[in-house]
Image 1 (cartoon, helix red, strand yellow):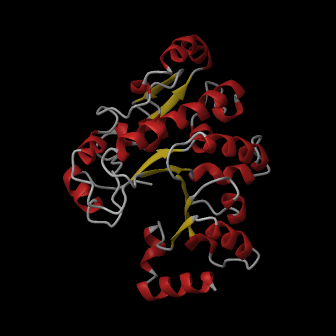
Image 2 (cartoon, rainbow, N blue to C red; image 1 turned 60 degrees about the horizontal axis):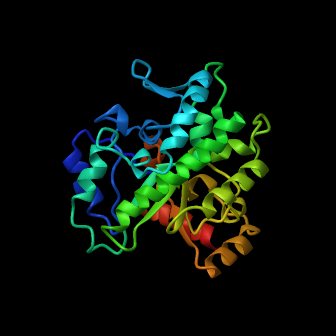
Amino acid sequence: MGIMPHRDIYRALELALSLDIPFYPQLSNVSIYEDMYIQVSQNFPGITIDFDKERLVFNTASFEQELDGYFMKMDRPETFTLTKEYSAVFHKFLSKELRGYKAIRGQVTGPVSFGFKVLDESLKPIIYNGEARDVLFDFIQKKVNIQYQELRKRNPNAFVWLDEPGLGYVFSGLSGYNEQHAKEDYYNFLQGLEGPKGLHLCADVNLPYLLELGVEILSFDAYQIEFMPREYATSVAEFLKRGGVISWGIIPTESATLAIETPATLAAILSDEAV
């Protein structure tokens, strides 16, 4: 994720650019358009922003009415470009000198998380709408590719990862969109991505499942897992042998949890998981 709590764009950029692999921050405290779901929604048919409730609204009738117009614009890169209105930070990031870094990173909210987050007029996630889901996977794919192309102009080792905090929902027995369906959709989706295929999520999910989706870079919340089952070792080893990269997120994302940890205790947890 690129979410940061800053209200000052320049201070956020300064921090992001101080890292070995910088990224463009998403600053929802600066603008509602910086929200990770709203930011990626631009030009998706049938979607509007409810500014009072600060959320996206999907209307099925509007989706059907706007679909033909959307299809006519699909071959235009500007349909999927992240504009200054939806991220002033991204464009300021692109204006920096980025070639000196080993790599740079972008991020786009993934189709599964977006599909579960955005509700229709019946308060039903649009992931359950087959036509909307098909359009969504293609839409996000094009968003990722356009962003990757823009970043790669600034650094040849650019990559974009998909933020998928909602991917854990597919393992719920209450979900009508299960892990097998998601796996099939995701594998096909990833094949159409340009550049390294990256995935980031904080949900506590089955690690071998994630490694079999077809990703090349995986960032996950290792702290939540607490103990890495030994049966995961084979999947991890095979992934690494294929040239895959794993980013072990060991720093807690909740302030209350972080308060009870120290660098030494976190290092010990990570060491235990790697054994």
